Image (cartoon, rainbow over all chains, first blue to last red; front, side):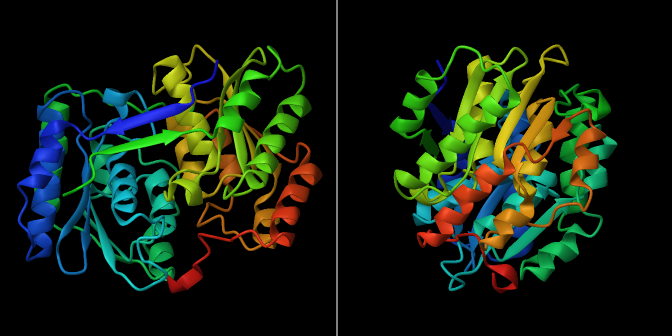
Length: 194
Length: 194
């Protein structure tokens, strides 16, 4: 008998963090600090990978949050970015966050997107992507990012999605390093052996 | 208040199709015929995009099915391949369908994967991908596939994922053509305007 449904939920602590968030985030750094805190708490509270994400409106309101739930939910799709995008769409009631180009939303990610999340971003209708740690920071501790275009940033720009890198990169790298130092599991790292 | 959960379910008719499926599918073509029928029924039963997918075990048993639910569920992540992979993982209780390389599973897709699904495939632990319609067949009716590596097939092969193309391609193309002819919506087609 095949499975017919998936039930995916944010951890309670992440929902609480979102509830306690300011009504408006003033700066890019404020938003990224929040997202890095999601990543750090996701490690602290259990089996989560060291990754967080969130979608913000043009005026700085928090629309959705996501944390990596691959191991907790035993689902390889559940990267932080995917969670944040899907929950943002649920809140707006639309698979197109841009609403036919009328609205601007930014996806913030504590680490640059893997190949899957890179591919998911244009379909979601966000108009901006802001990242902290780089691909190579994730690879440094053993995670993979998959087979991305060399110029993945240019590919997003070409679609009208503005990419901003290295926002609080060192803070996000520290979360990755601490995860590795604490013996956090590096899942998804199969290389050619899969 | 942010959204905290997602509930994703296969349409009833797709669950019924899976229930009525043979215990074992003998040939690659038998499996693909089933997946193309999922795509066709997804259009027939409502707002679904013309795409189906399924995961099969090495011995030909159906492990999971997926259909495109982007418009129905208002969620851009819910491509047929993503549904099939996530539901297969739920059934096995593991984010790694290969179980550390011990098991072999094939993902069948009625059309070659978009950039997001291409990126999702290695994370899921499938060891094979079998496709019917090509990228260009989807583009022919206005769908986009996103920014994929030119040699996306080689990139999957390099990870030990065998790719087989053009299995019942004409049958799958017919579903795409019929969708377009009936005025089916081409969502996700923002080009550079997003």
